[in-house]
Image (cartoon, helix red, strand yellow):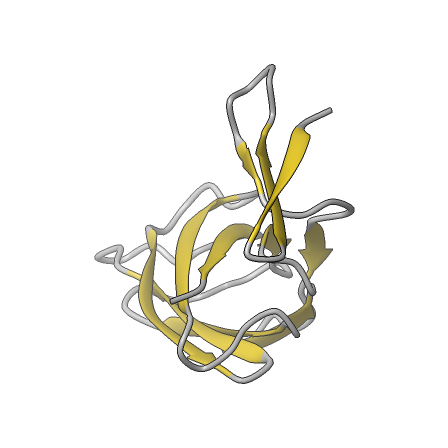
Length: 130
């Protein structure tokens, strides 16, 4: 269990066994709905990960994920990563991240020359306050 400390009214800590930064407690995972060009998810945490639905995003095409999150404001920096969940083809990359008040829009592009993404992706995020 991480030891939490308060800084400017926010809890943060480091998980002793892994050294991972922990900025809030509770479930930090969600599953997105939508498998076409868009998807949505809700997770009100300053960090977490979202598993998309099973995608079939063609080469050079994009998938736009909108994360509803009460912890995010328009002026925040949201760091985003994307990796393959069940997908075995395609090359997903984060193309754009646009924070707003209560949400962030994440555009994921398949940069593969010919192969479509053929399964779920896992999108990680971390909210940084100015």
